[in-house]
Image (cartoon, rainbow, N blue to C red; front, side, top):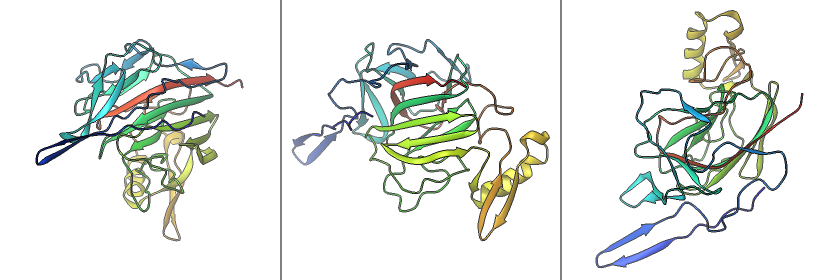
Length: 275
């Protein structure tokens, strides 16, 4: 793992006003990973190798050198530079209400490394095989995480600890998916280890919705959930978490959510695992 990047805070004192500009990127210029066998998913320049889930949506994804919080709106990220280098950033900018993007290539078993930053209140996600979302969310300061918070396997698993950094700070996910087993390291700490993506715990609202939706689904996609000692647990079927691609589990793309708010990603690398 790379050491955490430092964050520069520049404060300009003006009469009757303080302007705080927080770059979301350190100055080391180093890129992940240090070992062999990794393939970059982002070329630093454009979306070659990716396609839009909704081709008709607004085009808000851009390459840049860096991002910073908008001093006039803490819920937005501003691009810095035009990208092009190996340490470039992929920004879902403006209001972040565009399209999800997915890799053209499908993947089966793999290790995935990426780094992300969100502004205040924003929301994205990393869908593994286009199906199983690890939530990206501004959960900084939350006393207790829920199944929609950062680091959650969306509506199926809740991180035991809140590892969220402040808005504008870079964070890292290291995800391993082998068969039905998913592992997550978030900011250097293990969150899940070989967790079966088909089983987990959700909240009351999702429990009711999933049970109702399940009635119309094919048998492999049906859920079998139960209330047990005040918790909503069980089997979530062979299909995706909410808003994932249709159908049962199979090799699929890496999908980045781009219609729920601004987010930036960098150092996206994947390494395929042998069967």
